[in-house]
Length: 387
Image: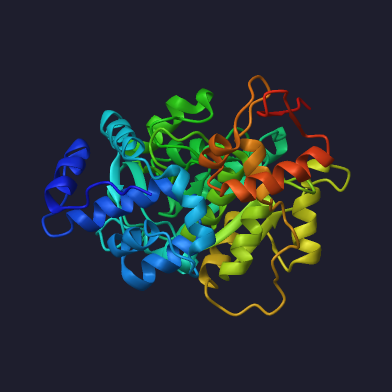
């Protein structure tokens, strides 16, 4: 494994692509950029190693072949440790005007530190330099929202933002978009967390909306610039939405909705969790009813209910629990995300794209073959099967 040059001169030169860095922290910041490229979001092994010895020494340990406690993780990081990939990430960030924020910076959102070793190693942002000290509520829900869901979301977000509450969501169609637009309509602050790089607005139909969010609030991501959103990264991104909020409200979610993944993270972090009820016949509200019935969620019918939740943030709640599974996924999903339905890919390429080791990739490809989701072509390359 070949490390990029980690000297002070090299760090300053690399960071110049994004406007440089405060004197005295260049090597630390540059090391975090490297980690940002080689480790997938939420990599607990990377987080633990960095916490133990710092990002620069952690890179040196990661680059030294050894049969130690980091051996399995090292095999995940190795396929991505390419100096050209680090340079490409910084170049993309510079073109987009993205700003690097790392722990210790004034603009670092300290709430995400509650994630422990799964906290982001670094974050990229477009927008205001704001560490998120205002009361914050996450409003999430279905992409395929109904008029009822979008209407309730707009009322909640508008009333909350008009009274100084920051509204956090994921920038997606449906409930997310309704929450962002309503907050903007009142002149309030709203923040979006993306699953891909901040230089790649997703969905494309929300490019204008995300630009408006960046003008008064912020667009954040922990994936490097140039990175594509994948199903795994969406689910990993959800933990940041939950961590950034003083309370999480789900408006319309199916029985297995990805929004339940955000709810699970909220429960794990001890964030107050609420859900908006819907018609008992509506599949779009089945996940909300599940939160209310099974997981001690607060029934949210107005902004006043949400304000009460914010007031109770941090209070013990013995009845709430993280939903079982709750839309979580496994490493097979990461492998499937790295495959194409049109062209075959070799194991090493799949490992680089998924952030897993080649050995792990082989295992999960075998499982996916059994379920009929991938095929191996005559030349040995692997391809996903169209649904």
